[in-house]
Length: 499
Ligand code: BGC
Image (cartoon, rainbow, N blue to C red; front, side):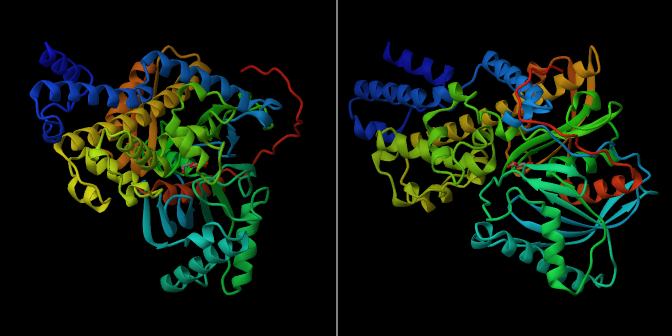
């Protein structure tokens, strides 16, 4: 009877069941006892992981909540208090294939800062990266003063231009700045707040284009041309859009997460003009900042948020993106070990260190390579531990893929209803290490979007260097379309707005 119970649990609940564990046999020599012990362990593991499993109904509900928040964010007055900011980008057109020329691009906001020289080639419909260079941003600069950060950026750009023999040219520059910014025009962009571990003083509330130009002036030995500011989602959409003109959504699942899409101008209440479309940077990472996701946050999500440098901010992102997934797994491992479910109850010093379990370990473990990771973490494991660790990683990454799917379904359904279509066919440009490197993330995301948005068929194009090339593309499109709109005045009053 007991054996039957264990088999049932291992098959139905745990794809990689814990049955047959050597250490269970060691702890509980009698086979009857060991069976009970395994059952007990399974129930414990299940108990911890249960809150991470979201039903399709819950995901559908989350998708609907995001739709409501998107409407709030677009409203002329309601956007002030909206957790999902829905920022107008002033990108009013996707590429039409006639753009061309040489551009510089800066890309700040992921794990590295990059400088690129990009050529947009009209004849071949290609965006070529002529050359690029990565500059590390030391931790002390990430959390230092804004002036230090922008001086560092301008110095890296200067060195790059020198090496490329471009110092005498004045090239237009696309600046991918992957943080929430209130864009006033294509070249005026006010930082709302830092995310993803950056926290430089004196930048929030200021125009980052201005700060960049001042820093270039301080360098004194080169000049830059017109500047276009871009979020990385927009860069990704635009770089894919040069190849596939039906690309109307850009999505990032990397260090942070976010998406942009083409919205009807008549719904963008904060910008003058009714005709055509404008790309909206949703900043969906902020979903839940008003407590609307409290029912699905686990104790581990709450802990990750509490110990971050920006508690209460970007709640959705903290359940999904590369900056946080590893930490969620680490906290689960620590707790399960303390409760004697894993690693014979011995928590190593390393495992107790915040940030010690990198998000890339999740992909590596799901690929099947454990030994080096666990031994570097100072752990001693049994076969049962390996299976449990695999299951933990799989559960945390699956939840991330499913939550992204719920959010993407909200965006796709919005585009479809906006256009009064029975069925929408569109393309999503995607970038980010979590999406690209995890073995099953992309398949899981696609399959769940299909379930949550059955009336939308989405084609995914994985962007290569979207942030860099896309910034150049936005600059090129902006040059093509000279006329820009302006934000209209708004107020802080509450007002019921519907789209
Ligand atoms: C930022 C977004 C960005 C996303 C992906 C988030 O933390 O707020 O602006 O697009 O990360 O890089």
